[in-house]
Image (tube, rainbow, N blue to C red; front, side):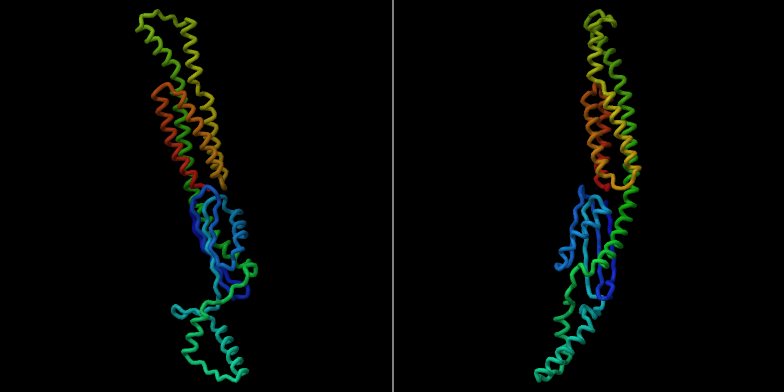
Length: 291
């Protein structure tokens, strides 16, 4: 399922602004891709845990940025005025100690600011874990809201496809029930064309009909198929992450439809089986989009 969210927070000391952006796309398993400052590589385990509690599967791209909240922006130049004053005071003190004349001009300030622009050392991520978690929570809330909205639409679509399969199952059962009487009639017609006398109570005739009925009996497959479809509707009603359950159920539904097709002895039943496979494939593709 797809989603996007953005969250910001400020550290308790007001020095750091944390920005988190999260995007999710469809994927069979949970796959995290984290982009963050090199100094914070150890943060991935915490992010993974935060995700596992809320997202069951999908590819999740997390982009985390940290910048000094007190930087001023002048065009493309970012600098910390307070830090600049401290730097000048330190340089002036060093110059006095060494007996060096120190008279910074605009050119000196320009070069110094360019060198120091944005080059503020990040603290360890443990020290900013609270604002990081807050920004992540805000971004994730937006992602989950989008995914929930999409999930409702997908659930309605899946429910409709399951009901279509249920209707096709009823038609399969109806066609299957007509196979034996139709075969008995066709067999009788063939024997008559061959000039053979037909006794409907003949043991050999009845045995042939019985064997055909056993080979073509799909009642068990129909019963299991109906059960699977009913389970699918119940699973959709549960809410929460149900994609894996439905994915497995699709495999079982496919197995039963295949078996019914292998036992089909009429064009009509085979046609219903093919329609069922087409609908099931559409169902399976949509399930991949569900968490």
